[in-house]
Structure formats: structure tokens, C-alpha cells
Image (cartoon, rainbow, N blue to C red; front, top):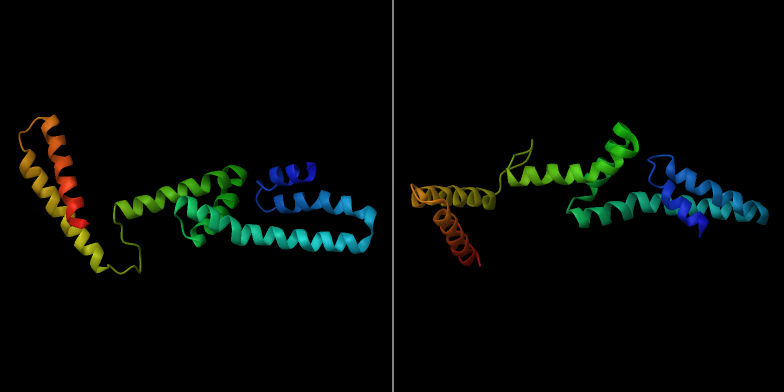
Length: 159
């Protein structure tokens, strides 16, 4: 149990965390002979690779709705640039950037505009114009009610 807790804490450190967590386990296996040491070392290396290359990107990707490639790149970049703090902040920052790109509809280099995106933008512009027309000179409470009404109407149209 103590080795597992130490491995969990050491795993937070980028690059060296995996080796720090494997070291005590290999040292504990030394008393059993070289074959056991080799088996423990190989199994732990395989587990660390599987965890860092497969599990972490998938789990964080689902939780933050990020592609696995973005998770892996963000963790590598954050850990390289700012160490532990960078690795801890990398995923929230990546999720924020992806959300801003989607919400602001920023076109990335090489990205082709899809028909659905064009239709969505045209619908949004039309709705904005209608909202401005209907709320001109109207108090804030009535403007909010109009916005809710328009939102409900649009949801009904889409479904």
C-alpha cells in the first residue's frame, strides 16, 4: 500500500515521476532475485507507458471533452514549460482554449468551413438582428423575457 501511495504522488511529476515510482518497487523485489526484479521492472514500465499514452488521454479527454491528441500535447507542453504547475494547469487551459475556439467560431488554419457551421452562423446572425429589433427601447426585464422566448422558440424549431 505504501508503494502504491508513493507511486501515485510521484506520478504527478512529469518525466521523472514514472521512474521514481518504479524505483522503490524494483528495490523491494531485489530480495527475491534477479528474475523477479526483471519481471517487476518490465511490468511496471509497461504499465507506466500504458497509463501515460492510453489511459490518461482517454480519461481526461472524456471528462474535459478534449481529443486525446490535445490532452497528450497539453500535458507535454505544460510539463516542459512550467514543470509540475504547468502539468496541473495544462488541461484546464487546453479545455478553455478549445471552448473559446468553438464558441467564437474561430477558423483554424487548414480547417474548412462546414455547411452546418455556415447555417448555424446565419441563424445566429438572424436571431441577433431580430432580438435587437424587438428589444429596442425596452426595459431590461422585458428584454430578458424576449430573449428567453426567442431561445425557447429556437429550441422547438431545432427539435
